[in-house]
Image (cartoon, helix red, strand yellow):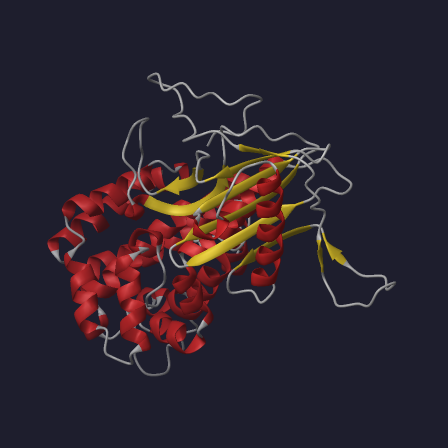
Length: 395
């Protein structure tokens, strides 16, 4: 991702960024310094928001946007320009210390900072299924100074986001702005996914069946699981479709991703048979290998950082912390906290060897040889491989 340049570069020669789609509207006399955080009468002392991120689902959003748009359109008319912000997709206003400003209405180049599922080279087309996470959003060809103030309103689908930083005391942090814009974009683009995880009825049903929003199936595949679970239907049909989509080529791509991580590469001789077993339809071998290696892989990753081993509870905390550090914040599409809960309640669920036979989704049941034979299914084998794959993104 390219951060802001001192001056915009509108050249389109090979190897450079494409230019903005147009020039900004020049404004003067802008009076934007914050929005009230509470009601009050004349003479009252009020709290004022000077930096905030909102989506159109937030009750304050519409009032704030109306106030901003009315003021901006009024100032634009005084400058001899007519702008219709309500019909725009991306509005960026950069206000300078002298209250002049540059208004970009669907003309500023936009860049997303993403975590990709696969290796890419410059010029590679990126599709939605290639995106593992969205970490930031920026306007790389728009100059933004440390003393500037910023307002950004943008549409994603049928939702809208609002970010503003009126910078009352400190220097404007462009990296923080990019991070917060990325968070807004992620909340808008993947709102249904966040809602599904927040819905304990739906999500707990998926976890009980061994499913999680694994990076590799993030998108339509996991959404089909969510929709089926929310409808109260059995998951068999959608599980069969997902399983059929994991051919030898897709499994090999996952394996290549694993081997790029040192703590995975050291176990290639152990993990390669699991890959081959999955392609051959041998669920028992996959589960026996994959489930018993998860703790070891986490342990190796932990040891590389801390120089010593640890028990599983500490390793799970380490996985969460690693994912948060890698993505820069805890609420990304990696869902580290939710994944730790998934590992605790499913993969490493408590198991009583003196009770009834367990499930082959449980590492402890498999490790004790106490999983019922009929639970060694290809669906559970895929879930075990996806669990390993998730750890490759985390550590």
